[in-house]
Length: 117
Image (tube, rainbow, N blue to C red; front, side, top):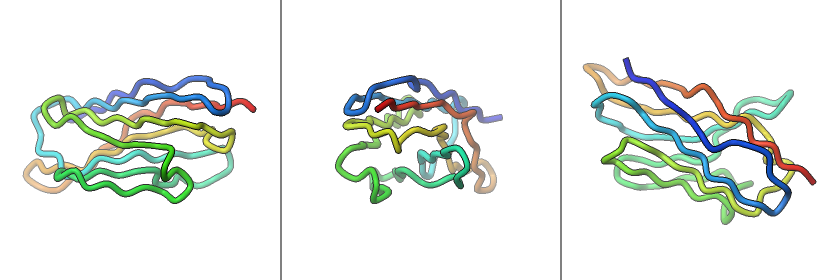
C-alpha cells in the first residue's frame, strides 16, 4: 500500500519561507503530484500540481511565490513557499496520482502551516 509522509510545516512570520516535502513509499508509477490546502472554515483547494513530465500548474494566489518540484528517483515532491502571507495559513496536503493495475490516488496526512502577521 502506498503511503505519503509529509514534513516541513510550522510557524513562520509574514514574508518568511518554508519548504514542504512529500515522500511516497513503494515502487509505483506516479502520474502527477499536487499540493492542496484547507484553511479553517474553507474548502480544500489546489495550490500547485506537477506532472510526471515536469509540467506545473499553480493557483493564482501563489503564483510567483511558491514553487513545486519533484525528485522522481526519490518519489518525493517539494513545495518551496516564499513571501508567505497570513492568508496562506492552512493545513497543506499532498496528493499523488499513480498507476498500480488501475489509476489510483492517495493523500498525505496534512501538515499545518501558520503564518503570523
